[in-house]
Length: 65
Image 1 (cartoon, helix red, strand yellow):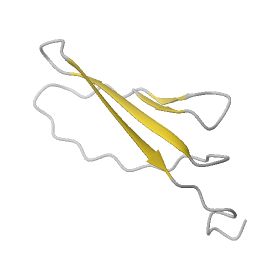
Image 2 (spheres, rainbow, N blue to C red):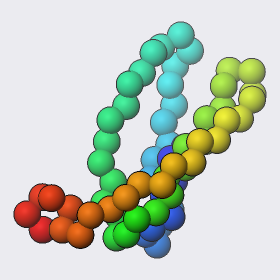
Image 3 (cartoon, helix red, strand yellow):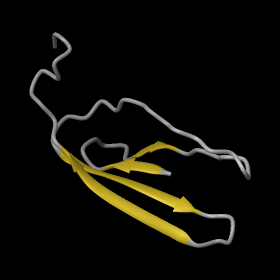
């Protein structure tokens, strides 16, 4: 699961990865301000891992906006 705390809806996505598959995800999230992104992962044995990182948002976003 992927969450962000900058926008009203915090859940960004839920990904279900089949067993024995190596994935490398890349995506963009539209955020209003600098905020934390949190990834929650449950492994095949039921252990849960959480990683949290602050993402710095630039005004205008560099996309002509």
